[in-house]
Length: 329
Image 1 (cartoon, rainbow, N blue to C red):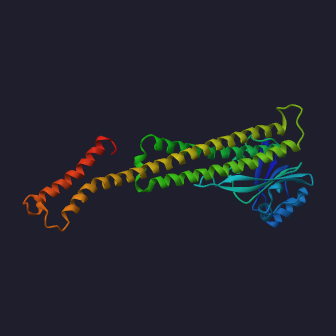
Image 2 (image 1 turned 90 degrees about the vertical axis):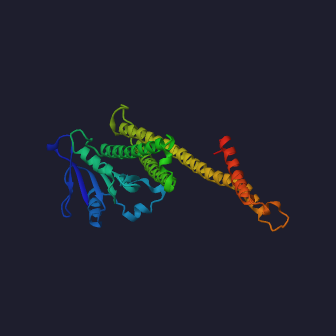
Image 3 (image 1 turned 120 degrees about the horizontal axis):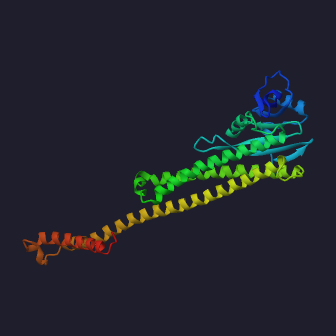
């Protein structure tokens, strides 16, 4: 699929976007060309229009870490990992290649990150995006950061809810049926999401650092795309710090959950120990009177049997009362 976002004088300071037929030429004023799972024919059309090489899906996958960002033929090639399917239980990372040329920004992707849809809607509104390729990539990166922050906020809310339930004395509501195992599984899912967000933000940070170094600084620090990239860089770094905070919080919750599991196991072991101690004296008495000796005075006594039973019950109750008095139970 070939999506074209272009400048139209009749639309003012916003971008008009739409699909492009296979046999249609690239329209005038196209500053953002979005290739979604492109065919070889679509790749060839963009290559002929801009004089650049479009990487295939296999080439994007096989890139070495040192090859994710490079310059070739006057165009800057940057591959970043973007959060995709963020509305699912475990979002995944999608590889997106940004090709920045003086004429247009080209994005090559094979997934549907929500940030692209959000930015496309934003750019179609008046004042939603600058009308140069550098401003387009700045807006895209800002949308990617906003989407990552939204994912982290959702994870943070779920962590707070689980934390309050775990530490507010209501953990007994979830102790039955192996619920602690479910808590640990959810912690693992949250940690996976956070690690994906951190990996995405690290790759985006590399892109921003490269762009800031590749373009000259503006005369006015608050003007130009470089200033927007610096603001986006600070936002990305703040998201990384937030992700690290949530990761530390999850680690604390995991340690606390494992500690609670150990406490429950200790309670069970303590109960078995008390039962064993309480049954030892009755077992001793039963063993004594179960021996086959003729010279046992109680054997000929009519109250010997009730006496032995009563003694066994008394020897079982006394340790229990002692443990309760010591508050060991």
